[in-house]
Amino acid sequence: MTGSTRVEELLVYRKFKDAKVFDNMVWVMENLDYDGSEQYGMDTLRGVYYDCISGLVEMAGSYGFEGNLWHNYLTYLLVNHENAFSTSCEIVGKVEGSIVDIARHDFEIFRGLYAFDLREIEKKTGITAMRCLMDYRNIDRSSKTFNKRIRDRICSLTLLLEQSGDVDEFMQHMIDFYKDFGVGKLGLHKAFRVERTDGGVEIVPIRNIAHVHLDDLVGYEIAKKKLIDNTEAFVSGRKANNCLLFGDAGTGKSSSIKGILNQYYERGLRVIEIYKHQFQELNDVIAQIKNRNYKFIIYMDDLSFEDFEIEYKYLKAVIEGGLEKKPDNVLIYATSNRRHLVREKFSDKEDRRDDLHSSDTVQEKLSLVNRFGVQIFFCAPDKKEFQNIVRVLAEKNGVALPEEELLLEANKWELSHGGLSGRTAQQFIDYLLGQM
Image (cartoon, rainbow, N blue to C red):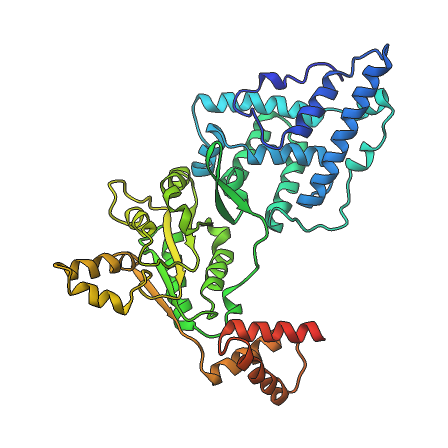
């Protein structure tokens, strides 16, 4: 089975990202009719094929894939390709119209790639290394790129696509995946950062996410409940508010955001982290996510402004006040050690004596925090609460010290390591684990 793969006829599934292996494999398939009359030509064919094999092995290491790595790679390309068909299926599932016929045409071509007998390449080149890649067993089944559930679902989808009896069955499997898991980076990843590239503002996946759960945050039950209630309303499609988590350092504000992400990810919640110097990019970021079938929290960690900084004006306009309404699938969550976000000094009171409209100046500085409808206070624990946090963390982490000795050492630790806070307690437990 050699000759044309018809890849050049693809209509909506074109211009894949991470397509080097794809392009090389297609080139090898389409050049198998080479008669071998020139050794240089055969050396090129073999070299390109070895590159393909190497690329598939590297992919298995990054994504944790098993089974037929070539087929896994094809599936990876399909689930990541954002186009008119896949993004529509993400929102409504099965769609109608001419786009269905166009997608069916492309899936028929992909069925040919899945069905291609790789032994034909082995016969031509004498390279047998691909045999182990057709039933690959990974040393480490964990994925550095996807969460385990997504990795397993891609491997399962690969098997379904391999076994599809016709193109309509193949297409239905793809529709089901798009509806259940989404498409592209926004569908397959939890969290993102923003980068400015030559092509504009790009939303980039964060691949190493801390597996923090809200139960790991000892105490703060009232604060956590307010955060959960607001987020639950948001992911359920009800009205919800922008949220400000403020209070003492090391009390679990940032950990709470991570816990919320891990708790609601499977219900379509995504988090985009953005920094103060990137606030001018907010409108571009929102434009890329407003029509997607997910709920997005734009997350700003340790948010505060000096009195000479004006970036908060961009944030005010985006949150509430610009002509364009903020999409219903976007909320702003911020953490800060400051209650009012914009720094105020005693000298400001002196300046207001010369300000004809001093109340306007005060309102200008308070107007940002007032745009956060939910404001949650995280205070430092007292000694008794701190000791309880230490006890719970020690039990969770298997630290086997007598309680009296544990608390005595914890008290010594906090006196020289930042005082009473959940962060100090966690650092103390980490220290003990390192000594065990």
